[in-house]
Amino acid sequence: MSNSPILKSSIAKKIAMALSGLFLVTFLSIHFFINLTSVFNEDLFNTLAHFMGNNPLIQFAMQPVLILGVLFHFIMGFVLDFKNRASRPIGYAKYNGAANASWSSRNMIISGIVVLSFLGLHFYDFWIPEMVYKYVEVKPIASERYFHELVAKFNSPIRTSIYCFSFFFLFLHLWHGFNSSFQSVGMNNKYSKTLHKVGYAFAVIVPFGFIFIALFHHFNH
Amino acid sequence: MKLALKIWRQNNASSPGKMVDYTVDNIEPDMSFLEMLDILNDELIVKGEDTVAFDHDCREGICGMCSLFINGEAHGPDRLVTTCQLHMRKFKDGDTIYIEPFRAKAFPVIKDLVVDRSSFDRIQQSGGFISVNTSGNTIDANTIPIPKHDADKAFDAATCIGCGACVATCKNSSAMLFVSAKVSQFSLLPQGKVEAKERVLNMVNQMDAEGFGNCTNTGACEVECPKGISLENIARMNREYLKSSLI
Ligand code: HEM
Ligand code: SF4
Ligand code: FES
Image 1: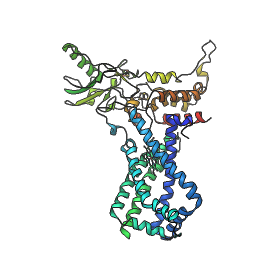
Image 2: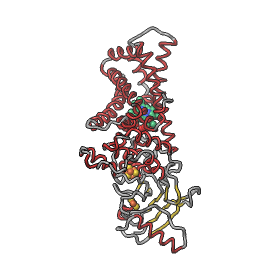
Image 3: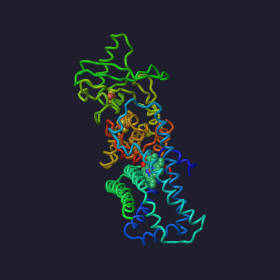
Image 4: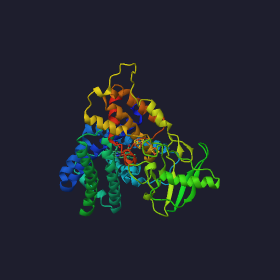
């Protein structure tokens, strides 16, 4: 992909960044809805988690695509950030960034790095044990184990705090990023206003929803 | 008003340069920012010192020549004005004012506050025009009906004066607002549509070659642009670029 001439130009990179971001947004929505079921229906959560963890299409087609998507997104994020910094070799003695742009829009790399570190922890907490369980130790399928694994993780006040902190940065990332991606792909028409409201609503509901789920399990078990 | 100034001084393109402190007194609120600098320069001449070099021409907000990054903002704290239209009433007695050149790799400093914006000219030359055959049988543009909506949008885009404030203010030194205004002012009109595809590809190519950064949609350019050029133009350029490079 990166060898095609179209990805060489600034606009192509910008569009690729937006598409990978939007892809991660769809993944995030699915993840959010599954986690949400853990709050009110243990069995439903177990069923869905079991399905996601054992359906061959999801495991061997969707999961690698998702991992590539995450890799592409943050590597491209670093590449662009590096290039953008290099575009102003001598900085200003005084630069009033807050006068004309939001904190979240100016610090996507910081919110991105927090989310990336969180992804590291999250993989260590859930994904690696799950891979070991299924493919290394090859333990028997136990479709009711997911809920208990989830609850056990949120026992620790430290882990719960780190999760909540990271979700707040996810909120900052999406507050700018989701709407920014519409602009990047060139959307600007009579639906844009409505779409932007949806974008802001998503940026609030999903991260704060995750915070709610984490706190719910921390305080309820 | 008495003001403390911190001004970037640099002898030539290759010398290092630094911020130097000055004070000016008896500044009237009705003076323009450039008149304030004229007064400083008069005093420097009397003292036998080297005057502060800065760009200016029309001094009425139409040529795009004046630049300056004032107190952390392109063209200073006011909105929808160039530096020549900025008045000293925006400042208070005793204020300290930082005055720096527009900064970007693609806008190298020539001397003090004067920067070389010829990268914009090269972008224009790469496609910011329409080819017209002036052999004598040219059709009058006014005979072509153009929807009012399109004409208005094209005119809005055409008000860009190529000052470079968008680049100076952007944390990424991106020139997307400028280039998108130049792309839009033509591509919205029938005369410009003919070469629309090559135009957007060539201008974006040239923009990248000049070393401008990549847009991340912070929107700072739109806020600081003296002509209020809209981000909508960037979306249009992205759309056209995508279309032109795929088809
Ligand atoms: C679930 C995780 C994530 C989601 C849903 C997400 C979503 C998005 C979206 C929608 C955009 C907007 C693209 C655009 O402006 O057109 C974006 C931009 C960005 N993301 Fe992420 N992102 C995630 C993780 C990360 C990570 C781990 C990094 C690591 C550094 C990162 C770095 C960036 C950067 C630097 C940008 C700005 C680039 C730009 O605006 O052009 N993101 N993200
Ligand atoms: S878009 Fe605005 S800020 Fe940028 S060059 Fe044109 S007039 Fe100046
Ligand atoms: S001097 Fe012409 S726009 Fe300021």
